[in-house]
Length: 187
Image (tube, rainbow, N blue to C red; front, side, top):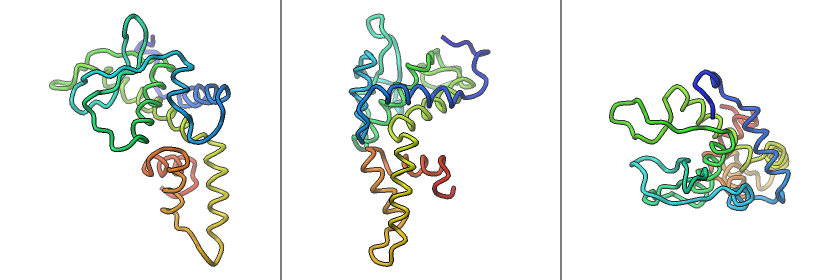
């Protein structure tokens, strides 16, 4: 486990590398099969009632680190559910710990706020790399972008983002963020 002194800045490179290692052992077809990755990692997925506003978390179930999904959360799509699973997998594989919240009225599940923001950034970097691997995302964008220059049937950036989101099994919002991070579209 990490102490509050051990994490002062997000470990983006570590998060992305952990995702790349997992992908190296899996078939690289899109969309990435998140459940198969989690199964291969030997991490159980359980559903429990969690505090309102919490889609998922990590915790110990029967003495083993597990991904816990909020059984009462209404996911907007299977792609949102896949994102949450990938993000929680990142928390597990990056050794994030949970402690009671110090925020008055806040949920008791969660880490101290100073570490929580860093942990969340790391887990999102992991999930983005797992679900939208850098090489595949760039290759797909550059191919799609090259096809936009034709006179007929020109696709808009929004159209390409939606198509890519569907291909990668993520929400259009997640794909847009990833493309911005990779500086393929303007912020």
